[in-house]
Image (cartoon, rainbow, N blue to C red; front, side, top):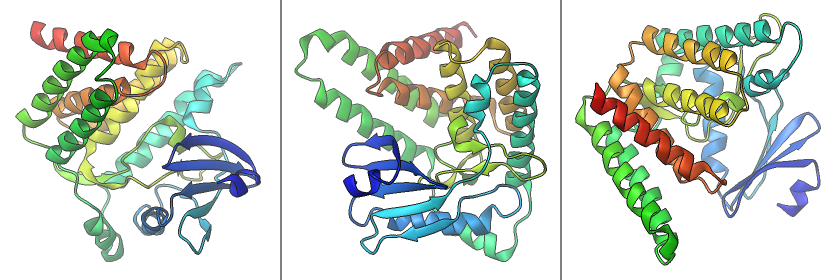
Length: 296
């Protein structure tokens, strides 16, 4: 990683897992030995699957040890960057960008696929609700083990267990929506809006799979609410983007109860983040959502 990091700016780092370096006209993703094999395969598959509706990065280089991939950059700001821009016309540009994404997302998931694209879709891993719950509990158990000998975190441990039980129950108590193509880690930093008629850009396909459409949309929506609660987005812009997400969910016939169930899953993931303040915020949001459900 030290060698690759010298070629640009380190923009993200997960110890022992992955790092991303922004260099001149490209992005460098660094994995453990052999860790680039699946991400490289997914990137090649997305060239086939998403052709026409989204612009995807080109893979420029892969190391012989399969631990480094170099991707081309896509010109244009991310939706996240547009959300933070100030000045005349920025609100209108922000709204147009979200409309552009929503049209492309609906077209991708509702469109017909040729034999090659269908073959790619059929080859992707299946992520049913049971898989999501298993993964969730693995992360919860890791957090609990890491903090089990900290007496002052006793109340947080109890709150996390209770929240996780409720989230798992809600995700499994209703029938799932159909399995479709899913990005797997969709949020506003992964979506680029080029100028003109160029399709929106989409980044990072390491987690792409077949999932319920609610999973991606809920993940995107929770990130927007997180921006709002952390004062990183105005309420007007939040409502603009949130409305587009809900409109896409309606067009894709996403069941509202499935959307809410996956929103809870994402908020629980936020609670497990090591970033300061995330645990208390997310647990409070989950408590609010549980209380609102009881009132209904």
